[in-house]
Length: 468
Ligand code: NAD
Ligand code: UGA
Image (cartoon, rainbow, N blue to C red; front, side):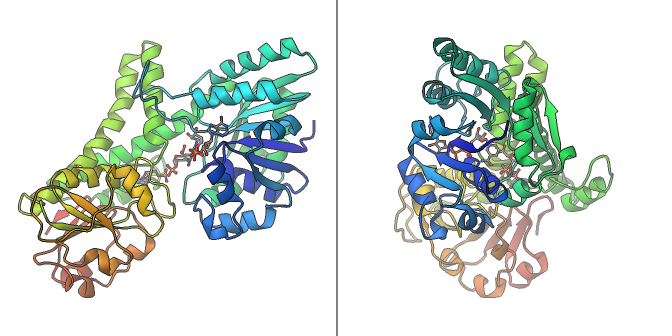
């Protein structure tokens, strides 16, 4: 079976970049990425490539090569499904907000809607590929929906595969072009071969792993749980380092050189953010409870608990260091995205830390090279305000600043919350004169050169090695 036309439902952080790379590497396949969100599709079609809805280094070049040739973005969902041999489902699967499993289970309404839409619009034989991260056995639900329509019209047939995505934001293009592995779960060999053939255009065969559907679905949740667990582990040790006088970077280097542990994902920080770690662990926790594995559920839940604690802990220590009150004080927040090189703020540590400080009455001046003011406003559930530094009425407020200097002007402290490259090389002596003294730098990402900050007369708190 040779795939000629692909439809991908969901033009988000995964669907857009993933299909762009497939289109780039497989010029004979026609790909259409569809979405219900017209504004998002318009942005993907924008002639100005800086306006793409997703910011990823290298994405603009890939889109420029393939768009209009064999890569298309459209809202014509039914027509695109009807002409496709293969349909990827790459829609959002957030944590349920209400009802059964609220706060833990994945909300599968968008996945089910896709399955029903494919069932209604597909023609001939269609391979449906789960690209979204899904609870174990979701493929059975999709199959049941598809098979119901197959019975009504036997000219149509379906196969369902699981092909979870392991890209990380900020490095999505590199991750897609040189993945550690591609995982395909399924029981229909010819469909698995058809999908593997697509990836084999640029990925070595031994890196294309084949498993059962359920193992594939569970491997994705497990990979994220293990990665997040490492971050909570090193963050717990960072807190211990601060209390005991050890340095978490030295500890990380010492343990990371053990080849069984490895050096990656040992950077202590303000806690993990992003749309998936928390949601996927909570989903795992929900599934474990569902299967009666309470101890297993509690074990994984503690990874999230520690992460939330880490974020509150940072906000609390900022208040403590600033003489126990930040009411009316101007605090410069450098970085709002959940990590560098992305415009994504979903579950960003900056949100919880900023909300805690707003609650304390702080005036936050926020800078991020890629995050728009409207996004910060949605995340903080608060409109920006023009504020005077000396106002002491007790209510917190925030505004976005265009430059780092403007952000820092009159501030009592700088909080570095995202490890953007330009925050590594700040001119501390010129920033220090703009601040109200005594002034602090809280480096939650350990990106500054401590000697430079101190030489500028600033007090420094750095994650994992405490204070001046
Ligand atoms: P996203 O929110 O950026 O994009 C999802 C898109 O799907 C949205 O544009 C939405 O409008 C669209 N959509 C929803 N229902 C639709 C429907 N019925 N028809 C058409 N379009 C519909 O989400 P994302 O970050 O791309 O994540 C998608 C999935 O991939 C999630 O399951 C996530 O867990 C997983 N994942 C994400 C990442 C990541 O880095 N963001 C990495 C690996 C896996
Ligand atoms: C993560 C995984 O790395 C991907 O493999 C996975 O596909 C994706 O989730 C997903 O399923 O959505 P992502 O969240 O984009 O990718 O980015 P990461 O690089 O994993 O960073 C996640 C968070 O952990 C960020 O807030 C980052 O700052 C933090 N982090 C990461 C640390 O605090 N320390 C580290 O050492 C590494």
